[in-house]
Length: 297
Image 1 (spheres, helix red, strand yellow):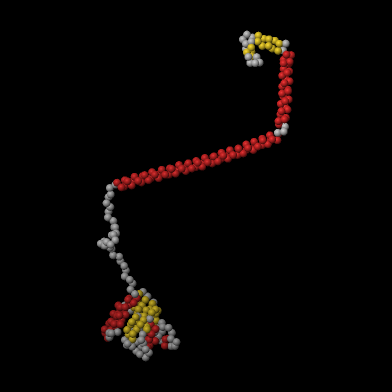
Image 2 (cartoon, helix red, strand yellow; image 1 turned 30 degrees about the horizontal axis):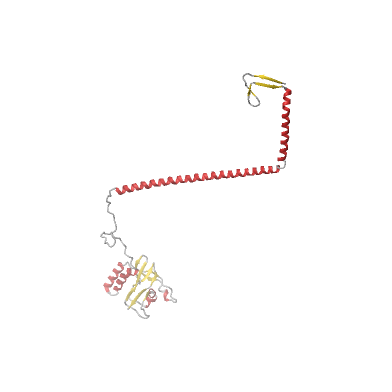
């Protein structure tokens, strides 16, 4: 059974979407009768869908799982590649930033050097334009092949030290001159000679012992009237000559003159004139260092 409602303003919409001015309302039985065929169609469609689902996916479950795994693996690989690309991009950005900072620092240094060069060039131009002031004359050496007339201060050079021979040469010459004098003149000349050269005298102190055989080495000691005269040429070094009127065998042997001087002495002869070629050299009190040489007449 159906009930119809009438509306003047046409506000209701029917099943086709059209505005209607009246609406037919069905009761419960009429609704069941209208719905039943629809329900049957829905059940049939659901049965067909179930069959279709079982046929499609029942045999392809393994393939579906494999596909899902491959999709997951590819997704993982893509994630790793993306992360690596991001890390590399970040590293490149840092490297680029470092290069940029270094380039900026280099440019700053270059600019600073350019400013210093510009300042130096400006100062050089100022110096070149300033008037030159004549400087005081300097001690400039003369050019080559030009004689300098400048007076040089003398440089003191100490004279060379004379040799030992030169130091006692005058002593020996004056001693040999005494042999040509006699009497009062000889006595006076001897005194002057001893005072001038501050002559010291000594003797062979063991002359008596040297008579025995074997003859012991000669020993010397101070004696005011000794038969050896000594002139101190240098500190501690003495030139020695014989102080005798006649050269005898006793002087030659016992008094050790044969050991102090080389000469032309011959046994059995006595010589009244003695000429010194070179004095004997003694050191200290009294050590023979170098034999002298005599010529006996």
